[in-house]
Image 1 (spheres, rainbow, N blue to C red):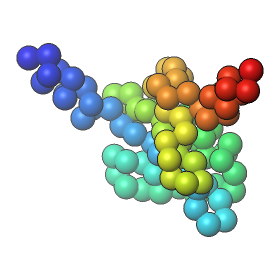
Image 2 (image 1 turned 120 degrees about the vertical axis):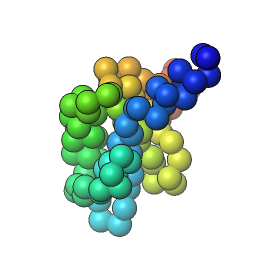
Image 3 (image 1 turned 45 degrees about the vertical axis):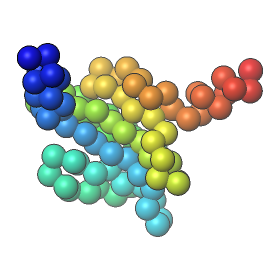
Length: 94
């Protein structure tokens, strides 16, 4: 029963995926496959977070780095699931 609830929760959550592309950054709306394009990663992240906050059932924001590796992931409330890579690097240097 708990497995069904977790499975149901996972299918109800939308995902907004930020990734680099030649000449800028994109936000992919995984629910629809639509892709939005931005000049900077910051612009893409702000729009993805705004869209996630307005998503009817909640959504996650995922950020992929230049190597297409997961660099960070946030819940609809802005809680880090995977900390941003800059945070991980700064903690490693401390």
